[in-house]
Image (tube, rainbow, N blue to C red):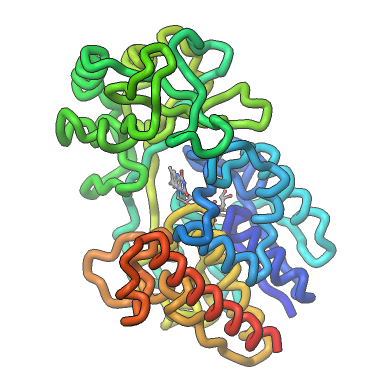
Length: 437
Ligand code: FAD
């Protein structure tokens, strides 16, 4: 049993490891280090290109539920994340280098995986192949995908946030705390008073943005990665109710809640680097330095990475993809990850696991039903394959899970979400059991 996988990202590595564990010979193609997308910077696998957060872990949260389902399906990336964890108050955040190294070692040391460090430029349909080349797929491979799917509308834009050094922060202003005292004061908070906030907001919306190259369609921005300056331009208080919301924080200098606050999250286990939470941006680098230095505590901040904006490519999955994640017209060509419309790091990895299940079934001459719609994975698969003329990628969220009357009558939101989560876990457990049998 043999398959090819294109892309050693989140989806490709999950799929490769899962299949290899079950005796499948995997040829895993990765274009790095010969070629990098504008957002990928390291030669390692499963590179996290923006935030280092893998989101919430609580079982009554959508992201927490997704992780539970992934564990049931046999995720390796969650094991790697565990070894790379950094404190993040109820969320799973990782040191991106430790995480990537752990995944790379698992993949490279697996006897059933052959890594080929080369760019794939064509799709060979003679045997099952998994395209997991991510949201920055471009060039010959993008053209090959477009030729198979008839989809020539592949360009969208997302943005990433800057990173500063811990030692360059002003600790007379910045204070450590998690909202509502949850966790171990995992975030550093930069508190604004009203005047400081207003001056910052005015500078942010007037700052010069970088031109967008190699783009020939309408600018479409993924809401979850919206540039801070675009969000700020929506209204004087939009960011104060968004990433800069001060709720649950108390400034030890004043004893009061600040007017607004920027949160900084540790980038690495050593906590020497911090990213500006929610500060994905497309401002010119000089402008980032000027405007973000107006944030209290960041007056002398050293920026080790500036924010940038990049393309986001995905299939028109409702038209072209089956729930088994292969192309309706080209059954040997499977897809996984963000390119299918599963939005987010963990969603992409989950999509790799799902595709791997289907590929193994195919190799054994079977076809699996997808996990039930009551599971987060099943609901996401439903979402990306349901006709939708304005199709956009979707991340895990409780809103896409189907509700029974029994669940609807639960008034407390936490309890309702817990009930949804429990139903999903039961359904996934049954699906996994049936498949393993
Ligand atoms: P990737 O992780 O990108 O992996 C694809 C791999 O394929 C790469 O290693 C690439 O080098 C390789 N490859 C590509 N083409 C070829 C080829 N022709 N031949 C061989 N190899 C190839 N999600 C979040 O949850 N949080 C975020 O903060 C976040 N920020 C994002 C920021 C940006 C700019 C973008 C574009 C997306 C972001 N996402 C974020 C969404 C998404 O979850 C990630 O992009 C995620 O990495 C997708 O996983 P993947 O496995 O599909 O692709």
